[in-house]
Length: 73
Image 1 (tube, rainbow, N blue to C red):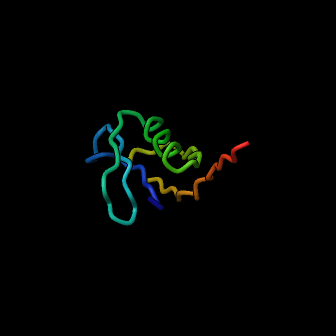
Image 2 (cartoon, rainbow, N blue to C red; image 1 turned 135 degrees about the horizontal axis):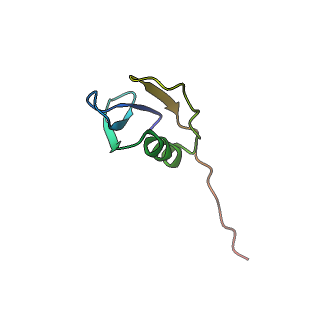
Image 3 (cartoon, rainbow, N blue to C red; image 1 turned 30 degrees about the vertical axis):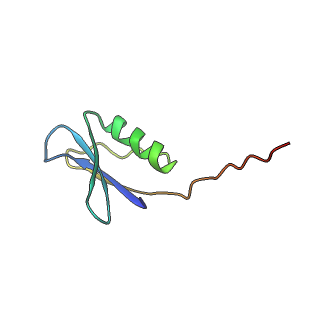
């Protein structure tokens, strides 16, 4: 997943997180904060707060994840 978008789900009160390039639905949440938290957990990027509007779409680019290596000893 490289780009994720948050937008209204079917124009209703729910929020959808989708992959920007394919449009594949990742998750539907009741609250925008829940959708932002899903994006944060999947990408490691904290979404910026946008001005409140009725019809919103947010786009987030995933940052490369940090790999933790464990060295024995």
